[in-house]
Image (cartoon, rainbow, N blue to C red):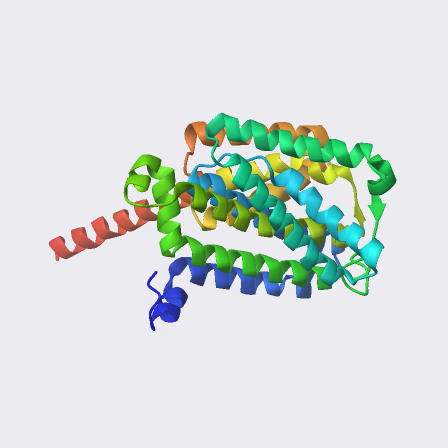
Length: 336
């Protein structure tokens, strides 16, 4: 997308942005119909939470081919940093959320600087070890973190999420909208082209003058911003934080949403999150263990048979319908 006077017009004319805006507008009226059904509002809130995580993780693997498992550790740090800042300084949860995000972003920058010269399985194992270490520290340092019991904290708004989930729904919608629009602007900018070039052929991109390491650190740090926001929001949504926030089951859901939706696409992680989390929640209501098994099977099945995910299937069906319509139109014209 060119950054000229018509940039805003081109942005609004994008079919993906138009679809996203319509989708967000539909989401905005959900509380009007589900006000007396708080469970449905909670499902949507958590779905948007996972959509933010999926969008941020897709920037790493989908565009830059960086297989990172640091999300659970960074997510938990976002929650704990905010809670501990509030307890020690008496700041409001909203200020705590922003300060926590800044701290987590700095940690993400350090991880990027230290680890992103690694590739493939080495990066995956290093970031997986980081998340595991974060969880172990939060469990063992119980004098500070509360251990397995966790810590209670203030809610993000003056009223609790259990009393008025509709307000938290709109906070989640605002965060999701900002994440989606900024992500789209990034991937459609020249930096998005650089990221795709790195993912397609790193050596060729370096030959063309792309600073590989600097861009990797940049995209990892940017991804961390949204993970930190999501972690702090989650803690103040529940009014509670525990080491379970660093559990790898959260990562499985993020991976499932991204891959099943469409890895390396803008709309794919959004579509995946809004399909996978409600399905996962439906299964979990009947069997918590079964939910993880089903998600794992769906990931493997998608990788084997539907490499482009839900979005790829929908695009294929759309092209097939359009092709059939053109054939029918041509046939009618020839007969006439």
